[in-house]
Length: 187
Image (cartoon, rainbow, N blue to C red; front, side):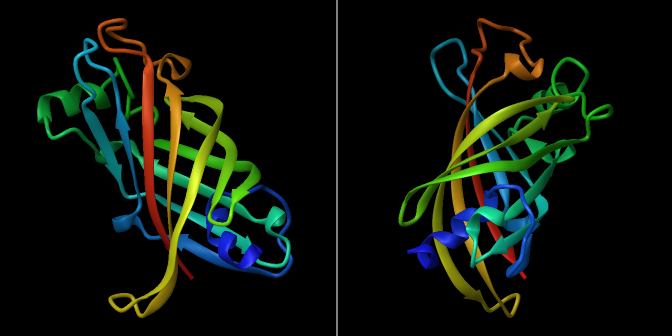
């Protein structure tokens, strides 16, 4: 049962690893995209590419797996350079004071053969909140460009930007943020 679900645990429970494999997030294929309500008319997006982190995946006891991940706020892009500058500035993410967003797993609940709910501490803008990621294992495969076999997953979450001290222009720009994570990890 656990063989198909193990790669989901890229965002797994914190705890000591015994029979474990160590993976590193591959930054060029690991990102977080966020969607926010704009005047109730649309849901524009922003993206941060370049996630780094370490996964210790315990295949014998998946509950002992761990992950830490970090995203560079300086890599945030919306495709609108002036808006990107505002988002990285002191009125929003304040990238000079808070250069990274981080996630540290604390709990996993397997929900299917290739799905899990993963709880962890997300720190953005100097504020840490518990967040639940709905994770789907995509595939374990050989990457010929890297000459390595890796694992890939997708995850989603629903966040409150106000909870992280990012409430400028509310209610015109809504509080509800949808987060989509895509990642690959390799030994």
